[in-house]
Length: 317
Image (cartoon, rainbow, N blue to C red; front, top):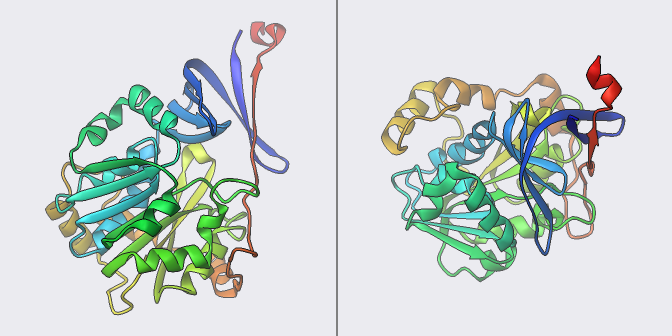
């Protein structure tokens, strides 16, 4: 009897994905974790019922998260990753030849160990001597850091009401991040759903919050098939005099000179598409006024999961 995973994407909208096989399951102190083979997406990491990354397109998300920030910096040597326990963000960072140290901090050691075992595409990253893996609160470790970083990458859980990470999308947190960046430093954060319908919920609020701290903030988005929406990120520059636009030719030149191996998604042409926002998105950003603080928040829709068996009679038809 076939089994299906059902994910609530927003009020009134659900997606269903056929499960080929549940490959492994564990429960940590903080969350429930599965690795599943889903028919439309291939091998997928599922945490607390939410699709985190899928074999079919995880490279789209992770290349979009990592490489714009790394390529905007002239020579990134020290990189901090908040979250990113599956290892894919570190994998992309460590492709940069200039990187001497990458500090990755995730609070859930059980999830990191589980991903090491079941996501072989990140084996080399976890074994790279430049990677310092710390199992701790990402905010605490960054606060205690004494040496500046060139790039800070926040690959955090979505800002959900009552969730573990919504405080890491506030002005106070971004001010602390800015203080931990060296000259010409760059911060990038994932920023949730950024499609035509739902970009106004948290993506625009994170943008206006970052603008209250950094002189230049570059918003961008990209369709991620397995997320059933466009996804958003924001890139913040500490130096307002740094060029905020790169030509197609310059991006291709930097990729060829600085990154080991061939990227699957990002090149100079697709870079231009990332930052080419629709008129609707630009109007929303221009009108957004909220600055998220410890007492003022916006939250994404908290989705859920059920696994259901296909009725025998339906399957027989």
